[in-house]
Length: 348
Ligand SMILES: [Zn+2]
Ligand SMILES: [Zn+2]
Image (cartoon, rainbow, N blue to C red):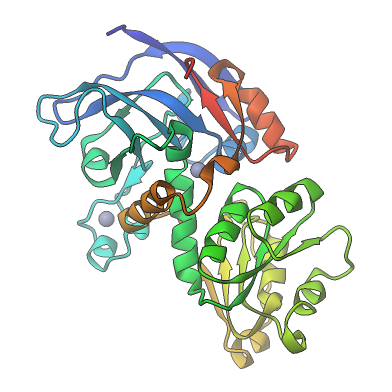
């Protein structure tokens, strides 16, 4: 095994460098994976543009959605071997803290993350290997399998939205996460209204099954536009935010009917806040909730969704881009071009 590998390192906002770094060294209960596919994520773009609270070291590996081949396995590894095609979640809860004990794994106080997909190799720590790693079936490609993590977040978001067949729902934002919400909500039997400010993205939204699309730049009042699409103008059963913009959070709250669930899924900038009409929440009995990340059960459901091919996951991937050109992919995302990019270190 060689001692150095290529990786994209995050040094600070707008400062990402392509360098040679030491290969990860695995312990006896860990494996080393050669990455075959790493997908760009909205959070990587956020990191690129404004930094990330967990990346305060001088140079950090990043990227967290990936699939690849095990090329080295420690002597104590059980259930995985060299040559296995695998994909894994980017974190694992501790199963021991207060929140894990009450089954709220996404709130785990000792959650462990594993980043570094924008590189030639990544190590899977033992607890992620045991709890959140899956072997990829032969008929599923690496790039499809790499969708495991973001889709797990969306599966979590859908579960918390309590969508029932026949519900009419509004999904604000048609970026990668909004589009995955559309696809999974459709599987649940919902009628979907998708809102975005890009016609290109709304075209994708229709492709993934949105029944109605609203370009928010082309309507005076997007709340009214949503309500007009519901019976008697009463509002939707479920309104979801997948933009992470406080103003959109506020509008999502107004899109719901009485008794609606409002899922404020998109994470906003730190230290932002919103205004809520107290009377509306009270008299309309709204449920307004935040949803974060995923749990091992959502990762499993995501894996099953991918392998069952009930969603055509390859449609979420716009193009392949070589590892050395990662910044190009992030810039394209910033211009809201395409959905996700598949970053490849070596020829597939
Ligand atoms: Zn992600
Ligand atoms: Zn925990």
